[in-house]
Length: 240
Image (cartoon, rainbow, N blue to C red; front, side):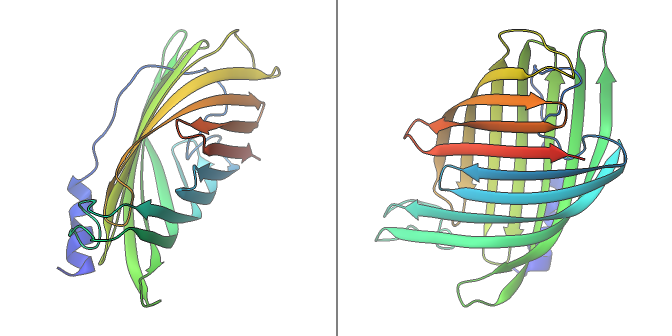
C-alpha cells in the first residue's frame, strides 16, 4: 500500500472526543490560545517522545505553524504490531522524527455561565526519515475536546500519525483539580493525573500513567511530573 493511499484514510480516522473539566480563561495546552497571538510549546514525554511546536493565530478560530515530533522507545521481544506488524524475536530500539507543517481549527466553542468547552481539530503534513535515512511523506490528524471550570480540569486528545512504513496513535487523557480559584493575574496551581495510550508500529505498546503539577500565570504555563515508572514528563507553553 502506498503512502498516498494510507494517508487518504485520515479523513475518516479522527474520533472527536469528550470529557468534563477545566479552568476558565486560562492558558491551556491548546493549539489556539489568543487571536493575533503566537504560541510556542515543548513537551518531553517520559523518554518516549519529544515535541516542539510554534503557531500563529490570526483568529481565535484557527492557527497554523510548524513542529517536530521525535520518538524513541524500547520494544521488548514478542511485542505485536511493530516491525511492520510482525513481532520481533529480540528486543529492539525504535526511533524516528517527523518535521511537519500544521493547521489547527476550532469548529465549536461553548461559553457557559461558569465554564467553557471547546473542540479542536488539526491536520499536518511533513517528512520522516526511514531506516535507510531516506525522506518519506508523513501525515497526521488529531482532535481535542475540553470542558472547563475554575476548580476542575480534564481533556481528551488523540493524534494519528502515518507514513509508508508506520501508522501509530497516541491518546491522552488528563484529569485535574485546583486547590483554589484564581484569576488571570494570579498564579494558578493544578494537580493532575494523566493516562497516555501508545499503539501502532515503531512504538512501545501500553498505557503510561503520570502524576503532574501544573502552574501558570497570564500567558506562561509549565507542567511537570513523573510516570508510574519514575520517568519525567514535562511540558512548557508561552503565548505572545
